[in-house]
Length: 184
Image (tube, rainbow, N blue to C red):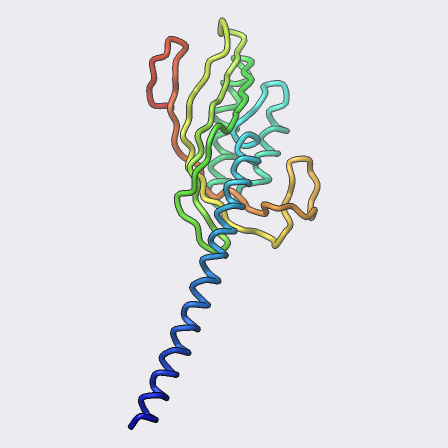
């Protein structure tokens, strides 16, 4: 009887050690995904959320290099049908700056982050810059291992944050008077 108990204890111990090893591996992978997602969001959000009326097509193409799936399609449609006409009419220059990033969740190869982004807009019709304080939720997924399209048009160059943006949402507008309201 003691031999059976010893064998059972050894089997249970081996199973527990195996489960713990898998859990630790996944935890480390999630930590890496979290760190890479934060770095990728800081790097790419300004490219995605900034534009200049003098070179809109280049700005939007550069942004789309980092987008995937339905959000890429929605972004392309919205920038052409909504953003471009307004930006050209108003001679708008929008500069986005990430002021803070936090991870919402992360798992190996995928993460969702919350960014706090200040977008400064200058137009021909405005008396001065307007700053919109936005909250942006991004879902990032790993694409080609250690390869991505960079904003400079280089493909296949090793980078630390090979993640693509899968979705963006959120927004808060602050008028020059300091009043705030939901962005459109």
